[in-house]
Image 1 (cartoon, rainbow, N blue to C red):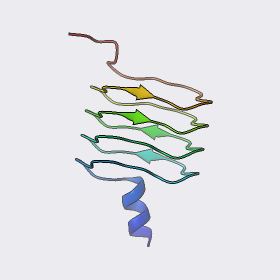
Image 2 (image 1 turned 90 degrees about the horizontal axis):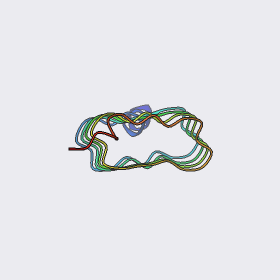
Image 3 (image 1 turned 90 degrees about the vertical axis):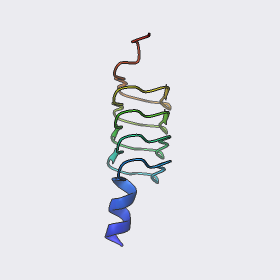
Image 4 (image 1 turned 60 degrees about the vertical axis):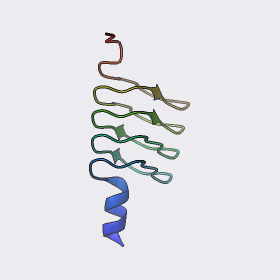
Length: 90
């Protein structure tokens, strides 16, 4: 059972979606994720590179996406939002 929980919280590369449940202490996705939608009361969400979308739930304590993010939509009551390379336009 712990292996399933570990796979849920720490998915590998090239996952199409990651949707952790509520009250997770940390959600750290791999690279090339198509979407990340954590539940409520997450303490941390740190995405890898080349994410297509990151939509956090409520009461997130931190949000630090990697490079090449196409969109960043945090929920309510975010304590910090620090996207990388989002302002860079070609």
